[in-house]
Image (tube, rainbow, N blue to C red):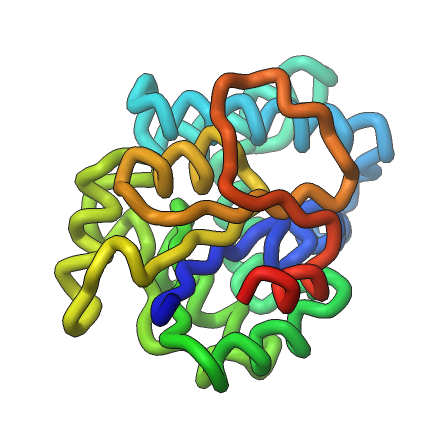
Length: 224
């Protein structure tokens, strides 16, 4: 193995905690209270919309146009959801909460393998978060869907990644990520090894079978 593709949200960064901290900052600007129940609702809705994006049912821009406006409408909050989304994007670029062991495993992998980011988010957002966390220097390149015009799990996305990796060979690559439908399915379709990061020990009720499954980032050392 020579190449490691690494997902970002809920693999390196704790998306829930990062998003929650960002929403709290936005709410202070708008002088509104955002309850834990609303945050949970937002997370469920956000995950659903990203899954729709993975399936090419909606665009990434649709996610940003829908998630806060629809949430505020449901709770009867008279706030411009699009403006709120703009504030969210501004704060989120430097908001991060690292998954336990993330820095250590990134350093470990970067010393042994060529390490790359693969993400369905925005390049500017992820570059700034990785920079703020002090870990961007460990990655050879960032492969993000808004650059390619394709998203995980499509083969087109991975083909774009592979085209930018010097001397790439499928048998020498593995993807590590938390999403069965995005990371693991995408890696399988692209013909590379897959490692499912599953810290909450969710049951896999899909037909997507990873080559490896881990519950902590430390366990990567048992594979690589």
